[in-house]
Length: 271
Image 1: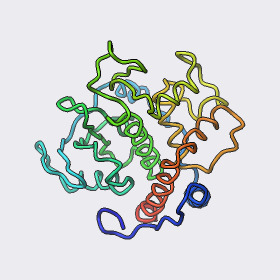
Image 2: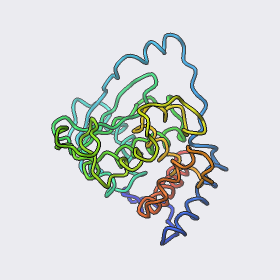
Image 3: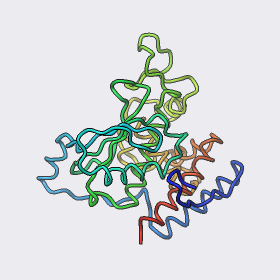
């Protein structure tokens, strides 16, 4: 059952091996029915839209959240519509995996789809922002975008990165979000795949052009492919980055759960 009480696809696996196989089956079925979730055609923008893309987002409403619910808002005129956006997120990700998200914002922008960020008042908590424009992304793009953003939460939450540790005392890797823990996923990903500070895009090395931005985005894009595509052979570095997540039993099981949720969400939102 989902948090909202609606029926969701049941995850039919109980260990890493069976969850990998079951997840691959669901990923294949999703691809057959809806097409690729990760290989989207780039949107061609007009010159005017390209200029507008450099502008800041227009914040429509901001909410405090607790679990699955809104507990506070600022001047919202369409709370019901905004709650439907929020419910897309809560449907796709288990509550216990997103407890760090305590704020939600709705914004308008010509090309930014969603984002997550540490809360200014409490850096151990996070905020999710989503674009209100229904025409800016397909259901497949919404799913992929939210899986990508959840990848940041997975890698940068306070269990993985200490936001209170100062840079001068950090002995691992210091990010804008804080000092990376010694056993953090992102530290192992960084040590394995980013011996150089920057790279040019190469399809054999990165799952997408955006992944070549930096190792934080590389990990989130690789995570998105891990969740939404079948297990690759590992013949390229890009594929090895996807295989990285299969080294963690808890992530393989989480993948199966997320795919069950994706399949149920798509069934409800795509005719």
